[in-house]
Length: 408
Ligand code: SAJ
Figure 1 (cartoon, rainbow, N blue to C red):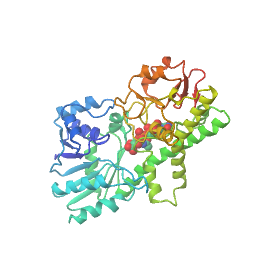
Figure 2 (cartoon, rainbow, N blue to C red):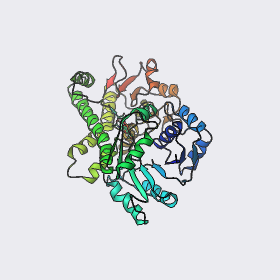
Figure 3 (cartoon, rainbow, N blue to C red):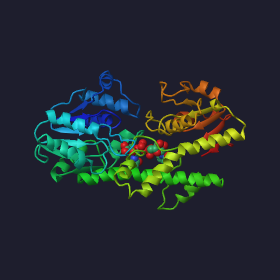
Figure 4 (spheres, rainbow, N blue to C red):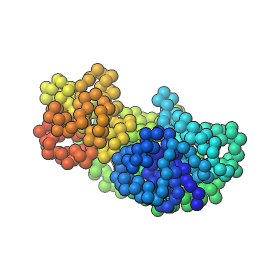
């Protein structure tokens, strides 16, 4: 079998490349970040994820190569970032386009080009096809296009790579089946072959569904706050219904997927996305809601000094080291806008200083504050609950069951 060249060795590309290699597929991983390439070649994985180090070792012993160069082969998987443009809320395809162009410069005839990066519905037609045709390639003859979005969740990536169903979107059924066979080397779940547009759309729909469900939980939390009802109890009870499955409220929605993908639909269909837009706004309003709760607690206890407040957790969710779009960063931004400086921050997963007044030692952090705001439910804080019992605690993740804890 020919080699697979995986382009982009980030949160998705790296575990995917390693998984292929572990399963006996010949893999070259390519990234233009030379520090990342060096680190991997020195045996150091570049982010924390359960089981990633072991997987890396297996992939290395199976001969995976890591380089900054694209290699000449006939199967490419693109897993580069697809940011969105803040102002227009539309997808910015620049990294995908640049990867496509680099591939076209060297690839063999009839290569298969698989895009794993999340792209908004219609992006293949709008950005990718013209780029390929512009260079004189005939799609379906010189290049076969496939969109194979991923579904793995940080914190459980390795398990989910093997066990989650996948979608393969292809122009041509035979190519779709060929790619399905390739992914079957490690994916044991169902792999659906469909067209590219449906694959693009279903990916964005999945994350939008979750965003809307979380927004509903967050709206319920706000309603329950007004009349002092226990939102968690209410959700737990409602979820006993066999067809109800409400997610959990929280301090906001972060990460590079759920807080971003719905905007692609809003950006492309502004007149048709009332529900999706409202959900986004509700989730984006949660850091401000938390700020209001902090203010309530400060008033109740006559605390005027914001430096007595400590935010626990900088990442976008528990037990990962990824802080992109995190609710804590959103909250700090709001505080900045209101000239409220000095709130203290700690996260056991963030080992270098990335914000002001950040502590790298948990004990020091706890000793300096009176109000602890749990923004992220890392296992670390669950194991240290005995150390915070004397503090005023605002638990936005519902992990403390001791008395006098403030909730969302
Ligand atoms: N959150 C809540 N309440 C909940 C669940 C999550 O407030 O009940 C918050 C989290 O704390 C976090 C944010 O939402 O800030 C997103 O976290 P997440 O765990 O729901 O999802 P991601 O962003 O880590 O991964 C999602 C997943 N998509 C779905 O579950 C539909 C994953 O399967 C995708 O692969 C990933 O997006 C992606 O790359 O698109």
